[in-house]
Amino acid sequence: MVPTPIDEDAALLPGLVRVARAFLNMHAVPAEIRAGGNGWTFLHDRVVQQFRRDPAAYHQRLIKLAEHATDAGAHFLLLPACAVVHTGSMHPDVQAAFAQVPYVVAGVLDVGPHGRAYAEVREAGIVIDSFDHSSARWMGVGGVNLFAAISMTIARVGVEGEMRSATHPPIPSAPALVFDSAHHSYTGHYIEHTIGGVVKRAGALVGDKRVAGIVSYWKSRDADSKSGWYRPEVDWITRRRVKVRWPRGGPSDFLDLIDVDFEGSGGDYGRR
Image 1 (cartoon, one colour):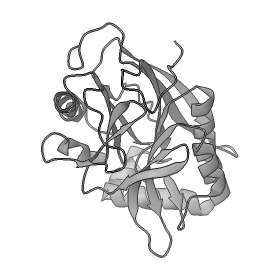
Image 2 (cartoon, helix red, strand yellow):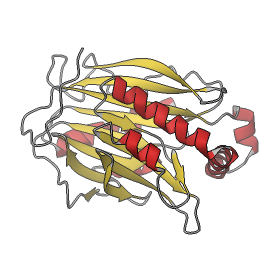
Image 3 (cartoon, one colour):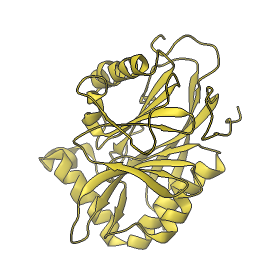
């Protein structure tokens, strides 16, 4: 299937949208993660370690993911929390690679003097919105509604409210993507009930149009992440995987190419 070119001014359904969703490799086994105590602190320290060991290789890792997404004709690249690491600003080569993908949603970890963790949405390489873990974002991009959040904050969509973008307001009666830039993998119960519930509530917010909820996270070293990690599980959402080898040897990250057919047959957003 060939993705439908996105028209930013489109008022109608966008057809087939391709999302390149990454599972990044923490390069740690579950026993190491459990022994580390606080899972978030362990992940933070491990990611910073990977970056500081070889910043150039880390940049190339992100560039390779963006290049694969571009070559696959993806409209969106979704990365987990803390995926983009920098010391104050994004490396220009990473920014140039991201600019080749129409939209990038990624967690960011600034390890500079004024460091902080947040997420940002880029359109053709330019930041159009950013947010932290305190709220979810709802915006209109490329003819679809986008709900985005860091990790479990996504559960606030349709319950505790979500911040609407002032520059890219929601699109009335358009289908939606729900993007969760998570830290760690979730349980099956969480995916089924929490992410599934968010998808249904988002559907109600966009006039019962189709909604696809997709999660990106950091995986343990040998995890195969066979689950689709999206909801709903319907025939209008399909997935195929690409393994993206780290630069200069080492393990692989996973990049799933997820096609969401907002116009095809297969039932409404909430039915399997």
